[in-house]
Length: 174
Image (cartoon, rainbow, N blue to C red; front, top):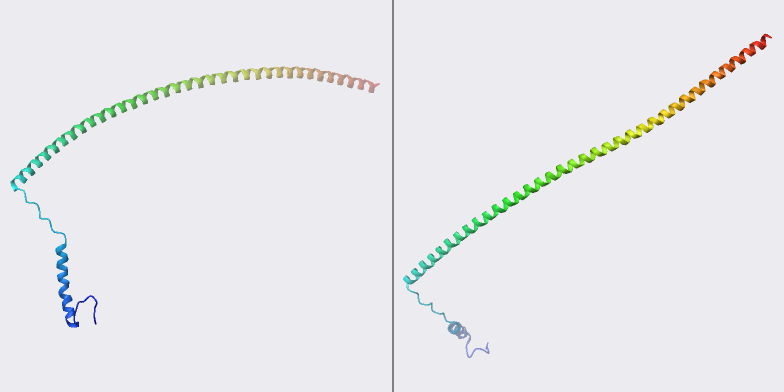
């Protein structure tokens, strides 16, 4: 069998050539690839150590300064918070005192109004009772007069009945 890509090969030798060409092509491709950049030369050890010491000292100093500033800020804020709480508590106490005073005053006013209202109601009830008593007296007086008239009429009727009975007895005797 003949392959168009193979230059000339017999079946036995064709495979051997292919096996040999594959690693050669791989090496050629790898050689054309990107080359490694060599690492930069190392700095002398003593200057790196000195630089690390200086950086550590600077970092420690900066941390101390930041901690001191944080403590100062916390103290200041705490003092302000205490003052604010004091002011707020004082204002609340004053408000409570004013509210209690207003409540006492309102209770006094309400009691005074209730007393005045009760006095007015009692006076009206007394006036009404007096009027009712006067009307009852008038009615009793009229009833008494009516009773006197009725008694007089009854006496007259009894006298008339006696007279009529006496006349009837006299008439019968005759």
